[in-house]
Image 1 (cartoon, rainbow, N blue to C red):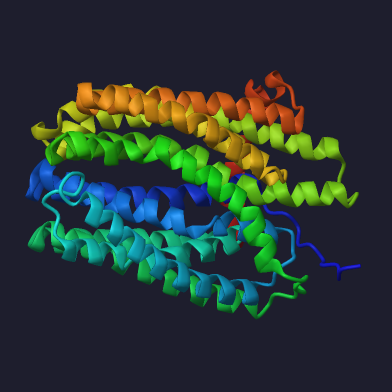
Image 2 (tube, rainbow, N blue to C red):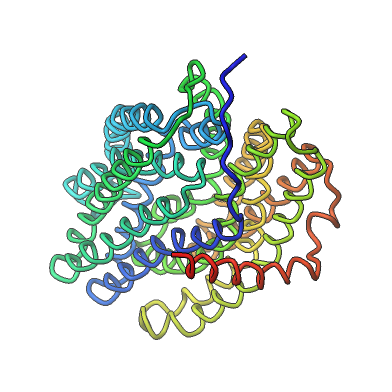
Length: 454
């Protein structure tokens, strides 16, 4: 029998999601301000080139990550991996995988420098790719924190990343243009990785978890299924910019990237819930298997979280619509006016995918990452066909339409897999109730009480 671990009382899920909103909004704010600075200094072309470099880093980090964050969260949330060992092992893995990713990303650039990355010098690519090691490291640190419901630490790491990007990346961009902005990528990731390590070392001193066997191998086995799914889904999320870069001018990519970044704000609220829901679902599922809670109690908690995900699409839609109509002409300028209408083409699919992300988190938290892999394997070919059918003919408009349809299709698949895994009825999971709306009043009282107790 493995050593048992005394579980701390579970924290308020809404409070964790509220902190996660800050954590998700910070980086988007950082990239948004940087995008505005680039728009005002070197225009759509510079913004498009930065978007391509950031996309290269993002895709490469996902390819080489091997699903570490999902596996780490799953193992640590089930109290099988101590904080100290998880930190040490995950940072070492980030070093190795980050080096592999840098060489792979450079090879991809070499193959596409005359098409997708035309006009972007190799020096800028090397600076951007140098962010891979600290990027993977701080993402692993965040996975450990979220797994143990250390929401404040997770938020601190993300805000440190965003603040550095705003202060250093945008500040240097004003003076040095695109080169200064690119320097912000490794600098912000390094600051976040350092702070994440410091916080986990402190928390690890109080951790009494007993390591249970080969946690790394279990984390990798679990994470690889999630990794495969994420890898396929990134075709839906990020390849639109890469493919558009191969058929359209950098200035068109820059305008489209603004539409993408603004509509991505619609994911802040549901993704905040998704982040805290995954470890909570895994924790409750483990407790149900151990007989500590009933299966019905676990289903009730999950159904309520799904209904909140639906509710959160309403404020998300309002906020994004205002930003598209008012923010684009006011902040980015007339050269980016087309981004407003591209954003409204993207918005329906983005809102649906916000719910789809929560569905995926619930399914994986229940211990079924293979369904996320199935969803990616089904949706990816459809998305590729849409991209190559619409982008060459309609440029950014084709990218927006293809992406929106792809997002909606992915969410539909998510509903199918959610029903198969949980057997929770559609009405119970997706039709909000009066009590759900009332929960927000309770959340505000909880947050006020927390501040008063400090």
